Length: 283
Ligand SMILES: N[C@@H](CCC(=O)N[C@@H](CS)C(=O)NCC(=O)O)C(=O)O
Image (cartoon, rainbow, N blue to C red; front, side, top):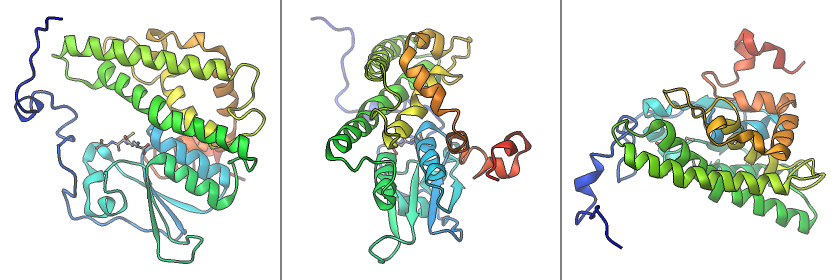
């Protein structure tokens, strides 16, 4: 097959051209500044932002009703590269957390990768994770489906649809087609699975629901709208996923989920300080 694109001998000659998001991406990892992280009084300290990956943890913390402090990490300001944050997550991505009261009574324990944080908390509190081995296996399968499939594919779709440089038209169209089609296939998988079910694991509400909801919601709602007004929800025809929309709509009625989606949106717990969200505060 002929090709009009030939890779150069090494990536360095082209990655400058592909730079986006203000120099956030580099081929190396590690701290870029010396700031330490704030530490509040609760045992559980969350360092996050209200993106879909962050919202998963917010939902679980609100559902668990455990004390926690949340700290906003502004990735646009490159706070994920501070010395303190890199100490918690060497991979420099939100969400990350510290448990100052781990079950073994040992020193504070660091947590990164949203799926790992969800599993850790669910196992620590023995909640929202099925105890029945069959149901537990099903729950794990969906958690891994989310982490390896739905999250990365939807994020890459969003990148090509909305964030990639404006002058990369051809690359963007290919990226949007490739990832957009895969996102539709993943949504179809979810939709077919949810036929006749209340939750991902049937009758049991679990971390599988909490981890999948935010990424589904971003594309069925107002997220990922191109500057020309074309919105992902229309572009991908999100209305077609009737079972998944019913499931998402029901979950989003839960006050815990509503609060969880807001954790680290501008403020750590916006319902405590922002009049628009005060009705969501716990009595
Ligand atoms: N697999 C990771 C993905 C985390 C992730 O991609 N976080 C994004 C925000 S949603 C981030 O921190 N981006 C900052 C960066 O890339 O520098 C997880 O699920 O925790």
